[in-house]
Length: 270
Image 1 (spheres, rainbow, N blue to C red):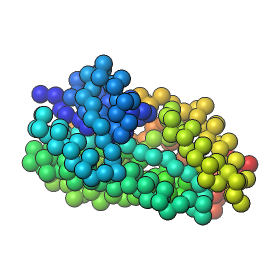
Image 2 (image 1 turned 30 degrees about the vertical axis):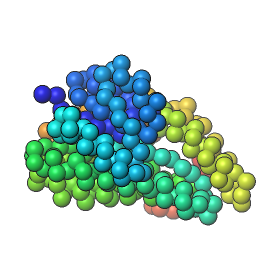
Image 3 (image 1 turned 180 degrees about the horizontal axis):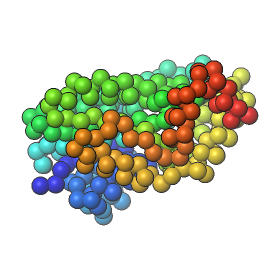
Image 4 (image 1 turned 90 degrees about the vertical axis):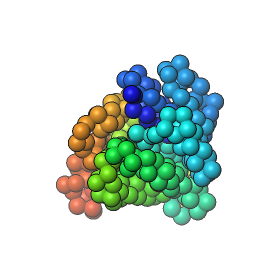
């Protein structure tokens, strides 16, 4: 019997590519997202679609109950729903910061809570959390985005050792530059929030960097293939890295001191 996979954030980017790719590989895939109209395209690839607002507990509970009522279990959870909202820490309203954490962290955690009982009972499960190079490297103007991704890294490390004995694997995916509407949306959001403040010069530098990143970004199916590796490995890695500049950036971050890395980083934003 095919394994059942739930992919959140399936309306675009990595989530969409992963839902399609895994369905083509024979998995029973449920693709979930808030924008239900954008999920319709997935039907032709054999993906089951569910409207899911990751910020609402009733929506999250309904999503998991629906899958369990139809097929009895969730074998693989892929937390791909995400928001990249930018601006200086001083400029970003706390309400927007909380929304980002609801989507990138708390929504993922709630889904994990709901699928774990079944995974423990079946002595099998894969929880795959989509982090980012931004879960290891913090860029200016992205404080809340990076806070959410650093948090998902820490959550995954703690969870991995909590559930190991039950046959459940916890895997972190760390993409670099990947083609997605999030890059353009993030750049526009940055200028909306900080483009006319005392941080405008830095905001313009970051926007320029985003434009360069967009040109070099890889197709999200590259990340979908990494996710499949993690699902099919009997003893998966704790982290899989892919996408434009991901490995070089993490290597440089590892070998440089904080101040040397800051200097290198800021030189790219002039």
